[in-house]
Image 1 (cartoon, rainbow, N blue to C red):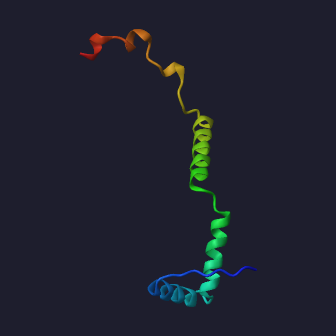
Image 2 (image 1 turned 180 degrees about the vertical axis):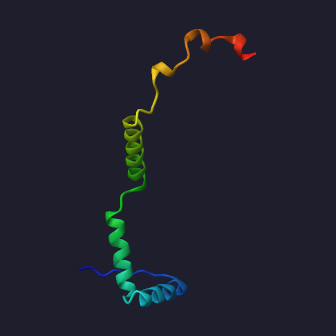
Image 3 (image 1 turned 60 degrees about the vertical axis):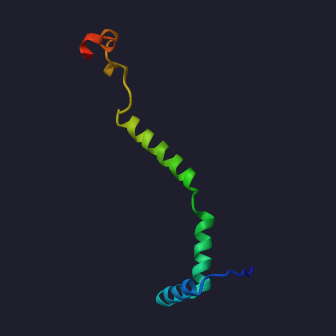
Length: 84
């Protein structure tokens, strides 16, 4: 096991000690758990990419998305008189 040294403000250290006492653990254990969480956490970009893919799959599974049958006919699309 490796030891590391971290410098923090006195106020931050005091708040960490209070939190550790509430959880009946040590500041060292809080830091270990924090670092362990970082090591397994999915990067933000990867999480967003995965969520986008899941939403796309859900949309198309529900029949959503673009359908050519819902497009305007070419004549209506370019009917400039209807826009005035």
